[in-house]
Length: 398
Image 1 (cartoon, rainbow, N blue to C red):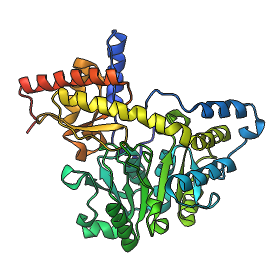
Image 2: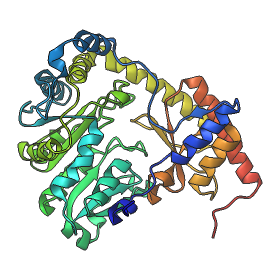
Image 3: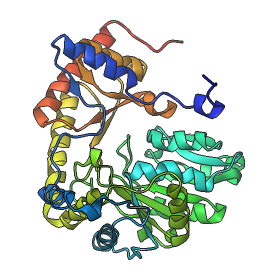
């Protein structure tokens, strides 16, 4: 076989790979595993989505190539949603692009905007869908640690001038995965100003735009002055509508950036199945009647989990958004060691912070993907893991 490229060899391992093999072994031996790793809740999509797919599945017209234009009804549903939800008006034909999940658009973006020698500013820890495509484009990922002292915001004004000069893309994701942090309006305004001043494209990942709790309503970056000139916003139906495997989302922003991303994608794929786009339109049309109830499920899980983890001895904040808890690892144990011990000794899968980047060391992520009773049971088990770590005096290696 020919050797792989240096860019390919520079890719880090994708999170959870080792844990999946351990899980299979434990379950094959009759063990009970509670999976709080992947953000993939086994809940049903809206009934309207299922009915729409059944309706169009036998329609031959929906089996043709979608291309990048996609289904007009989906584009129109996106534009309508953006106006109803955020008060943002977009042209469905020039400022919206259907995606095969938001990861599709995020992954193809570097091909349009990054050359060798360019830099991209990436939050660390962060979604690995930012890092890999930048590496494969031959550009330099500049990883910026997300720290509690900065409220898990990227400190834009502290970035090295040499990096800023070479940067062409800034990735931001608020509400944030994995830290569950939210960004205040003044921060988003400053991020837009940073991109305008430095000629940087703002790739704003808004996959958790509907996951706000206790009255908190996450905003679209396009609500802010100047954003349309420098920002592309990515949305997904995966989490909000329990449609992770359906692979449907969209990008929205200025016509020039939408056109650039569409051109790249035209060489990579021929669009998502039109039937799924029709189902996606049905999901967006059902927002008012269905989404608030689904978010209430996760709010209840959040409340139950926060109380259970605190009772088990963990220190954590109550998140205002997302479907995650971001919890400090007790003591000085490396997060990946803690995660492996949690699975091997107690059958609980968590996501070690370091698996999402070195900046995540010292934390682990819990996904609210099981019901309240299972979350409480997982917290008790993890409390035992933490207690065993303390009793054996485990510390990070020197």
